[in-house]
Amino acid sequence: MKFFNKVAAAAAGFCLFISSIALADTVKVTDVTGREVEVNVPVEHVILGEGRQIYFVGALDKDEPFKRVVGWRDDLAKADPETYAAYLAKYPDIAKLPTFGGMKDGTFDIEQAVALKPDVMLMNIDAKTATEEAGYIEKLEKVGIPLVYVDFREKPMENTEPSMRLIGKLFGKEEKAEEFIKFRADSIAKVTDTLAKANPKKPLVFMERAGGYSDDCCMSFGNENFGRMVEFAGGVNMAKDIIPGTFGTVNPEQVIASNPDQIIITGGNWEGYVPGGAWVGVGYGADEKEAQRKLEGLTERPASTGVKAVKDGNVHAVWHQFYNNPYQFVAIQQMAKWLHPDLFGDLDPEATFKELHERFLPLPYKSGYFVSLNASR
Image (cartoon, rainbow, N blue to C red; front, side, top):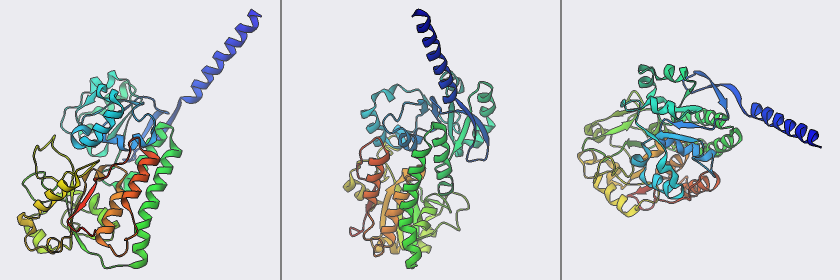
């Protein structure tokens, strides 16, 4: 009997060994820069090169959104304090997660990253130049840590789906990633299909980036990010031919001369960056009355002088962080309602965002992401 027990135990151990081999699969993945990188998947230990990558990582691991995260950049608490606080309340252990500075500002600690022994490091594409100049890819490769680039910000309308598929592959969550991608595509189609059929006149839209964050005016978007989202929503981006890249600046005189039909300002709670600033604090569970008050205050700046959008009350604010996560489709729906209220009277972006939370995200939905000076919109 002892002999048979030993054989059974050995067989069980062998099966476990074979199982572990099957689970550890070395594959080549292609990141959004076109680099081929070898990674053992599914990954179990991940460093988030930006804390806000949790917006999608949390959708793949809804029940335990931080189970693979061994370290992350320290930006979420300052850039989106309400969301961070909500995660902290539900998952208090994240306060103990090692945090990193950024590649671009030179505060990233590579020795700390190596000590955490991650299976992969997710890095935003906007840090690519700084990462390469510092030789971090080669340094990490020498100790067996692959780095892959994702992008939800520089060219989000082009790179969001590939980024989600890449992370889904790394996590062994391809089906969940595809489910999210389909929900996103269907939500955008509710806008673009209607616009294609109706072919309405497109209003001129000035999209201001982080209005009130500083005294300067006016940061905006070229033909990407929110600038591109305006086009998806049935508008004409005022700065499209002024700003050659994704981000840039237009002067107040250009805004006045262009006389936009609509103004949309991105906002958030930036108390951690600019205490007491004039920014519009929209976001997770935000005080919408206070946000509306601050939005109205921004219309008193010189750039608003005599502008049609201000006269008509067509000035709105949208959560800035839509520019940096795969939830852009919610912003597209809301902007479509602002730009074409007659076409999209039945469209409910709040319901879309609530469904997103219920189906994919670890946190319950709270409103506060949009405000407008036009009460009917």
